[in-house]
Length: 433
Image (cartoon, rainbow, N blue to C red; front, side, top):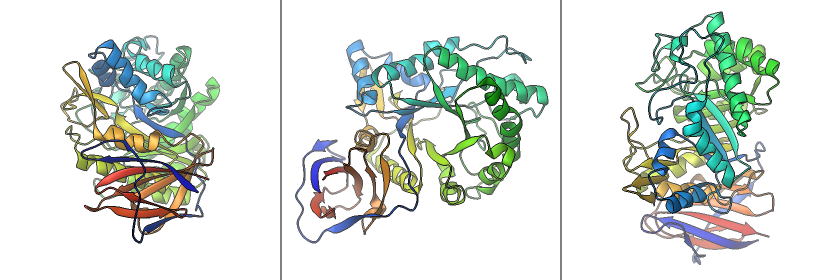
């Protein structure tokens, strides 16, 4: 085995090419037998209205370059991306695909607004990478389906006519996007079942999710002949009982233990505190697939310290059993202020007609640019394995992403090859036979 490429990012220099020779006794990273085979589906981001609006403020040449940097396979190569169904917290304002009250027949359903923003963003991505997989989730049902009838907070009304209409609403969404050339591979019935906030949200209990999938969503998708998968998500974890940990039993186990719901579910999507439920889910239901559906968002400062935390989040999920990892905002204006007043990080920021690649762009690229769809997730051992994750690509190359948290150079070895990691750095090591 030989080291064919090493790329290093530090606070002062991003994505520097060059193998660093190591000396002294190395910390050995070893490849262990897997506990469970995971075939990688991809890295991606959520394509939000605020992102495409920010891109539209750039000169055409720079706008095209940013899109190329995100989606072209020979650059970042994002290939597993999320779409909101209606407004999310980085929409430019609240909307759903049918805000006409009591329209149970969905006669006023429309994706006209999406054609201006989110759908256009998806088509820009597809033009650069036709292999992108899209999954989607609503942040709120149409407000008239809820109690109280408002886009933030509340719950969907547990009435036959409402739940049936909402299932058909999601069917219509998938069909409308397919007619535009964008295939939705997966639907999650709700973003963050346990979140109630001032932006578009809707609370669900585990029992309500279970019954909606078993009685309404699953049968509606089946009757429509859709090949779109239904996933259980997105689960943010703390649950309706408050901050008592993962609430694995409140959501995941409650739904999957029901045979009528289980038969429709192909995987589980976790984000934020949902990370605490990942391990028991994988142990209990190893036959299902798992994804990380939303990277934690930071506070808009795009700091080096938070970028390192993002690496640690990636490691947690990738070594924990997911087959895809999804960043949140790919592009935002500097400061990252949402329509509802939150400040959040993004891979790329815009200001005064110029764009900047932030640290998290490079941290994410350390994995996304090197790992191919169909790769196997490696199980690593050794004293530095708590700071690393790895993949075996279909072409036989091994990709190791490793963080050096120390203020001094660290020598490591993998497959008998020794190299050095810069102080306080994230590196990608690519090995070939």
